[in-house]
Length: 298
Ligand code: ATP
Image (cartoon, rainbow, N blue to C red; front, side, top):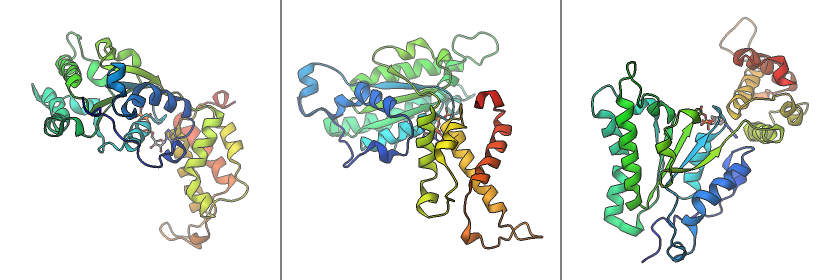
């Protein structure tokens, strides 16, 4: 046969460092090795090995840890089409048949392109965020609408159909691995499971570095800000919370420039500097908002 259809080409000059993902190098390598390496093998090798590409992966772990970020960046890396992102709860529709129709539509473009271009079809990535939401109601009696059942079935049948579609990769995401229907996790479906956990201190340092890159490069971050110190005192923060911390610190710095007696005018704001004290105020604020306790931060 010809060149593998899913020999998606790595985007030129791709580097993990440029992806803007902190602390997930190991996870990324695992995903790459298990789910993508075969897609960039030299022509003919997949056939020679007699293997099939992985058609689906599941990223699981706490909210805000970079699952969506990772899924999107993988798409970029593989030169895939802009991924279709759907949200579990969004798919569920109170109108009978509409949810199944929504799922069917998701696969439509990939099917069409495979038909038209065969092995030359590009890679289509479908991202299912909050996948647990459609599983919740499966098999539930009473309370649930029962719609989840048929939606999962439709998804299963589409995934199995993907066997004939070499140009589809499904990335499921969830914070609730325990809720995911086992049938979805079988070989040929979402068969590779990668946990994306909260970042450790080194990971938090990388994430802080990413989220402050602009302000540091543009000279608006004060010299007294020590990212290593911040990484040390943000235990249990997710990547999203670290992003929130940086935003909050910026707002405290702004606040120093608010014109006296005004709420909407700034004084000398061009010379803004985000300082250590802003990060400390931000920490207090974020901790209060997320209910992070003192012990958790020790
Ligand atoms: P959810 O389960 O709530 O959908 P998620 O794991 O998909 O969460 P993302 O949506 O990828 O999380 O993360 C939200 C934002 O938090 C990102 O857009 C990014 O700004 C920041 N973020 C999260 N994790 C990281 C990370 N590892 N490195 C850099 N930024 C991160």
